[in-house]
Length: 199
Image 1 (tube, rainbow, N blue to C red):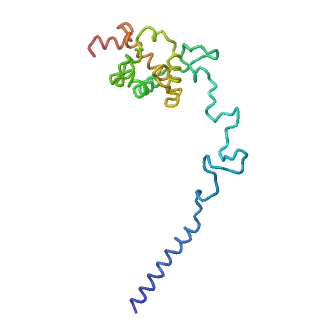
Image 2: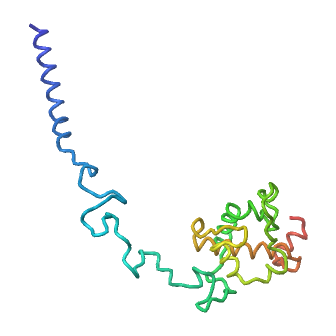
Image 3: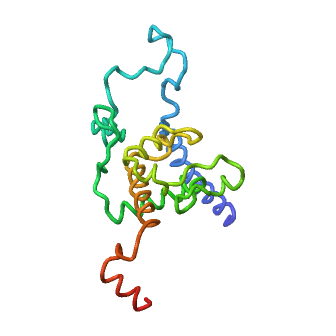
């Protein structure tokens, strides 16, 4: 009798646990069960027979207006390369530029911009050094334009490196150019004293 009561109690407990579980499963409304069009699927709703709609002409996605011509092209509205950075160069921007340069540029240009990166040592065409007179005298817009659109054997990096990061790389290239031509007179006085003292 005690065993029969125990079995009946277990059955009731099991039913008590199973009932809410069945109710929860019955209330399930997954988004993947709703009617929808998959990308590039056929549709009889539109005349062209496609479910995907083309972008409305003369519209720009939020955050992509790019109305600052110099910032996004490295050129003036007249098409001339800019000679002044369109953003303020800070230590943070130089650090970011160095980081991006080391990732995207150093494989060809090496870490100081001499054009002897690892892929060049493996047989790839050598780019020009950043420290020659021709590139030292180029406007900053030149470097931005080359990164954006590519030049010669160099591919474009527009899709891989955002505009702000391209300008950070340009700032870092200018710092590299200065570093390779620096003299002791270019060192700030407090740093010069440390250098003279051996620190």
